[in-house]
Length: 498
Image 1 (cartoon, rainbow, N blue to C red):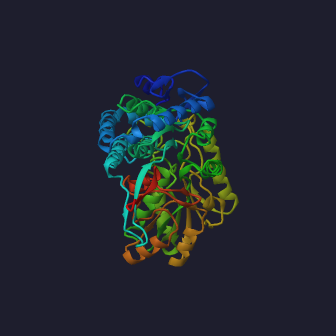
Image 2 (image 1 turned 45 degrees about the horizontal axis):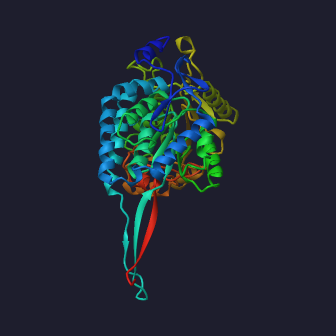
Image 3 (image 1 turned 60 degrees about the horizontal axis):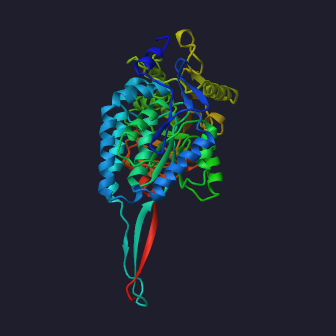
């Protein structure tokens, strides 16, 4: 592994971060360092916007919404402004992918060519730009002969939207939130995770160079203090947040003061159920273990971190999960052989290792992994992928979101037991079922209490709704569900007797 990523930083000419507010780039104020999780080297510094920066950004967005042309602009004109943004994202996709890898350590081959890539972000923007002239209301039939009242509904932009991004997929998440908000006519203040500022700032530069009116798009940076100031600001009408359930609960409790609209995509403890008639038990094992050990190393909220496996194929599943882990390669994230990301921070490393210790204390059997590699990798935030068996669903590792490379295997004997185990969770974000019996697949997928369920695989898509139930969040992103979340319904009552 390369001992340093400074050469990549210099090649990309990374500069200290700035804010973009009201059509202007701003500098100055308190700064914090952003380090790379693979080496813990400093990559850049970013401004802590704090309360004053948030006040300024929200004021700009408020002015643009209340007095500017964007919310009142004809749909065709709004779409014409968004289309060049899509083209510029495509043109900059290689640089954006490099910056995303320099942010969170996702292997460059995934940053360049997966559902979290810049190409995917451009496609998501394109999807939402297409909605500009398709956001409609309804007309309603005359209800009573007692009056000549006629009713029509309209969808209007919700107002000033705060978009707060998680660290794991900054490019795609930016497009999902900002693209939908702009298509609806909202004005936006976006804040990336304090761990991943570079790629989002580059996207902000693309939007800054567009024909968006001043104040329609604003970009701020900062940590928890800045995030708290943004979600509690009285000038914000809507909060779209992706992150932990604990922070989501805080947002819900504070947003009630002025009844902010909320979209919260929070944590998960998703289940992958493997029946003995699965098309391939080895493939199911490789899929579930691979989602926890490669790509972002289990740092995705929808990752199935509970493998609920029929007892008759348990040994076969564990064997092939172990074989999959042999293919994991740590190292320089720009090396094409690297296929797993480091853990985002030293703090998160300690948290994941704490969960691994709790699993062992509570009686689960650690089959492999769960330790940290040394040598050339010692300076980075790496954890060898872990697989636990003899797991009960009441154990901490089966209850709480770990957000790391840990898979817990829980056996079952009947379909009813499998569904009961899957649903015995305070989370309900995603899940998947592996079986060749389509009737069973449909029945089990409907029975699982989660926002989405995959059959023989799982992947999200920008044109379909994504979100959770229970502690996994509120609201949906993707497709028309996102349009609904960034608009308000207004009913017009027309009296034709006057």
